[in-house]
Length: 596
Image (cartoon, rainbow, N blue to C red; front, side, top):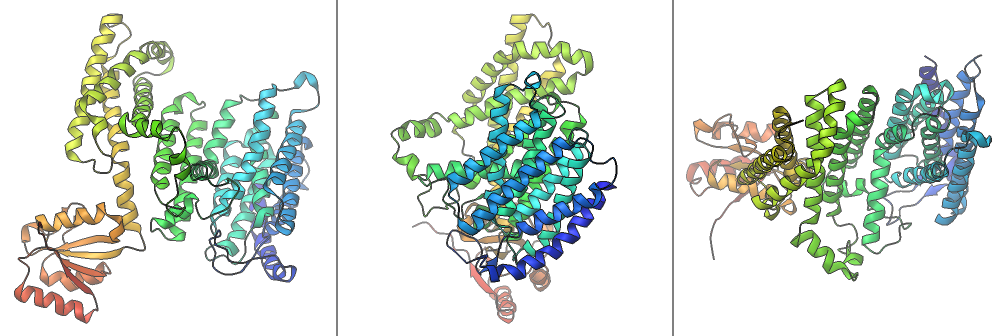
């Protein structure tokens, strides 16, 4: 109830304060003009962080005055002080344009003082120095990650609100009531700020907002370690999952800028959100996709907490990590630096070596499969055994893992899997996967029986492992095709195409549309005169009937263009099609197949 009151009060206060800041900012010169390295197209008031910080403390102080709530002052006061310090740094940056180095030094210094305040001055209670170093860098890193994430309307505020709620819900017992109330107030303030910041934004948060948010979230994530004295790794994994979006975006941008030979501190429209828009998603869709990723990360953290440990969730955390890496690789192929995305890498002295690793030796695919084999083998044991039996049999997992890795990697290589293209992975490639995984499982069983005479082995583990590894290998290989399909079907740039004729030519045309995103053509439906095809799905596209359903299908799917796929579509049928499309001002084109 306390957190809910703080949330509601902060939401209302943020909307009101945001309106005040929005009106006062132009008079103070706090307006961001359109620039090539920014995403907005019109002058927009900034320093909305004043509304966020003000509403957060209003919501917190309204309920903080209740007797018995505050309790131990040190933790929440330390986090609040660090947040206000970074807010001040952000105000100076918004008004005076501090250098990136100055902001980095300020964030590291603030983080160091926060760590000192949380750990206490008693030498007997001091934490290992490596913890202090990691925590200080973590604080500064999250501050700047939130600063970098503020690159599209509504993105940073929404992602941070999701993160604040997950922190409050999952680490509430370790954080204490005051910090939970502060996080709830922050989430409410961000929700209220989204009223002004949703696309198209009427107010930006500025660095004072993003640095304040980052400091509050980073400070709260450190409290369980230094105040409650719980295991360092557990809250670190939880915090990393909850903050997966800013961490992913920051790592992605820094790596890609380095490979392009650009300064890491030089801004640009090269973030994850920008590349999603370049694929054809609308700004709102790109922001929602990253909201969804934040919810998935928080949901995984919730499952980790619910299972009372990191170990049972290793397969799920590893799966999420693989998915994020694959998304990063896919988005890295979207040009953002005028065809110079990897120029620094290409000019390096070790570029030929890396090229050989990537294309000749397929090192990336092999390393990926190394992870998949390990995770699937471990997951098979987790699914087969539980309780005390699991503890016993996990020793066999550890002992046999090297043998399983060797057998399955050799089998996957022998099957020809690494010669297959991810872009064209299809049904014919499934036999390669099945052959590789099946042979690997057989070799593993033979080798382990020879070495251990069947002791500690389980037939069900072998079956589960083979099933999981098959699914994992197929999922990773078809991931690029799936992402291409999603991008093509959701792209706002793509024309919605109705294909007349669901025969061989029509199916070939649909496949080509999906394989060539530069065509900007999204096949939404077939029309075919064959009644046997009615209400069927062919190559993933529905057949909606014959010519008598043509006009209805045009309306239902908001078709932009019609393509005649077969030379058999002519005479009165073609005349009627063109007549209807002329009335609707729709383009009609025909597929020609020839070899020259």
